[in-house]
Image (cartoon, rainbow, N blue to C red; front, side, top):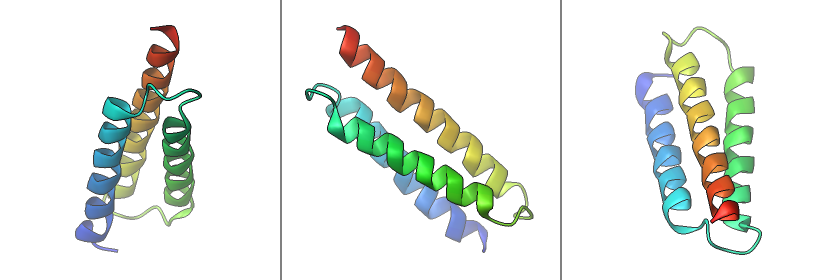
Length: 82
């Protein structure tokens, strides 16, 4: 895999996360936010199963996905409390 193969999907996922956090946190039960969490967790799992030698990009992608998971969870928690 080259840099473009990893970075383009990652950017797409991060944009999706921003959209979910910004616009979907108010639905009862927040099904879209929960769906986003599932997708991020699945993406993280796939990245962890990938071979490790990617010039540091795989590790960076995992780190970014971890941050996205945290932000989506914070959005869910915020909506639940406000």
